[in-house]
Image (cartoon, rainbow, N blue to C red; front, side):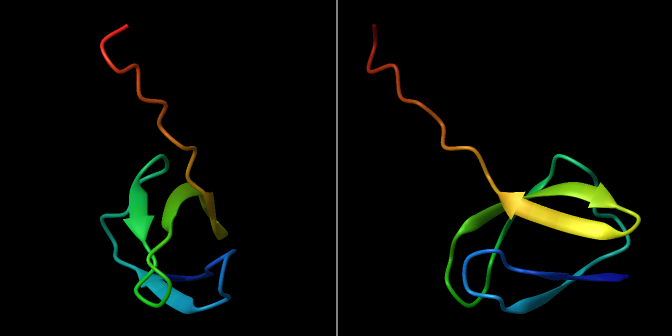
Length: 56
């Protein structure tokens, strides 16, 4: 297991052994979506915002 720090609120989170690069996790403290960008060492960044196409 690895520990990462939320880039928004600096809360500490533990990634489980099945975590994968590209996976989106949610910070339990502030609720922001974070993307796992590396596992060794573990690192997360704010997840990219999905753009809605609104049927265009």
